Image (cartoon, rainbow, N blue to C red; front, side, top):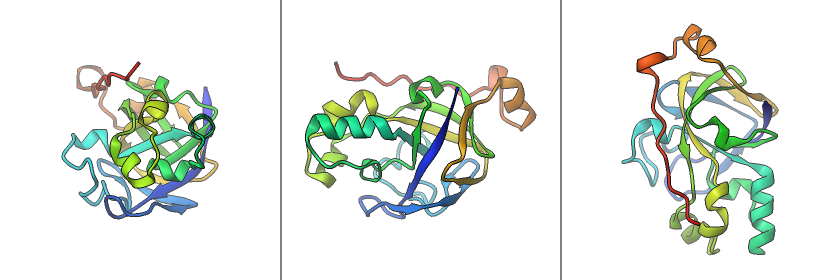
Amino acid sequence: MTGRVLEIWTTPEAAAPMVRSTSVEVLAGAGLAGDRYALGGGTWASYPQQEKQVTLIDADEVAQVAHEAGVPLTPGMTRRNLVTRDIALPSLVGRYFAVGEVLLFGTKRCPPCTHLERLTGWKLVKTLAARGGVNAAVFVGGTVAEEDVVRLVSDEEAAGRGAPVGADRPVPRTVALPD
């Protein structure tokens, strides 16, 4: 199962407009260089560090939500960092995966909150709930670029790259999604 990165988005401050880049440096244990969470800010800065380092969302899911909600929602407006295609993002929760040379671990699903509705003025929480993407922690940093491959990584490969496995493996958090 592989996908690819279509877009990369960051912002230095909570509620500030997202800025698109063609590549970004990803910092182990922190997130995307220059992004609000790697800088220690962001709307959800008080949440566990591993849960907010990188966020991913599927471009086709965003298009479907925009159609269903009847609004011109674009992937960058969702406030997620990496926009992907051709990989089932929920299947990454609880697993190691690579984006280009970067090693990530899927920490939880990422349903939207009312903060997104305040910023856009559109009612999106219910429509986007099961399609809000996932959060991931960075275990091996590097550069991520548009068109990079997103692929699952075995525990053996993750361990070989220095990530904790076995009893030390990270534990994903289950997030209840609305019906």
